[in-house]
Amino acid sequence: MPSPRGRSALSGSRARRRLKELGAFGVVGGFAFVVDVGLFQLLYGYLDVGAVTSKTLATLVSMTVAFLGHRNWAFAHRDRTTIRRSFALFTLINLATLVLGAAIIWFVRYPLDQERLLIIQIANIGSIGLNSVVRYLAYRRWVFPALAGGEAAPAADPAGADPVLPSGTRGA
Image 1 (cartoon, rainbow, N blue to C red):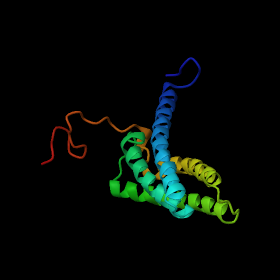
Image 2: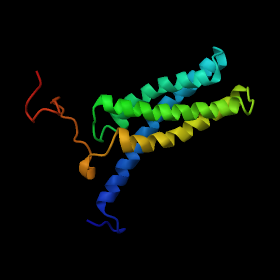
Image 3: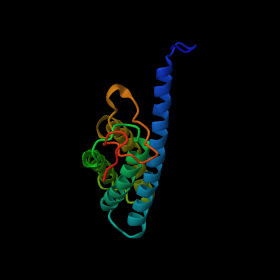
Image 4: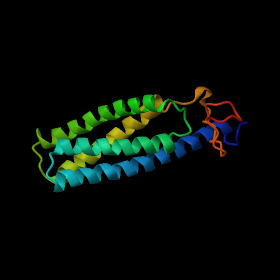
């Protein structure tokens, strides 16, 4: 049914769902960002671990935190593929963005010969921003694909029924 502005109610529903998804993606990403930046700061700034190694370790930890948040909250309404498949694709995408982030840090640290923590951290934060855009688009497309027909996933059964089993049956 068209709304007074000429848009269908369905497109408004999609827009709200997308905004909710982006908001949840942002919260999960914000938390993973704090983990990434904090761990990078600790490793590089205080424990004297190399810049690229620090970036790699910080990204691996924050990536795991992000997967759990995205699968269970930000993209929970989208199709649920097996955890093995979704984590494998998530890992591949994050490895690609890890290489991109580490390359940015490497470029600033070595060819540009920047040693100051502030400069390296600015490059780190810039790489996180760029990688966030790449990740969001890739997660929507490959890791947490839309359900067939573009519908949202059904709400969880409060009684705890197994979604794989027929309605009214329980696993052993």
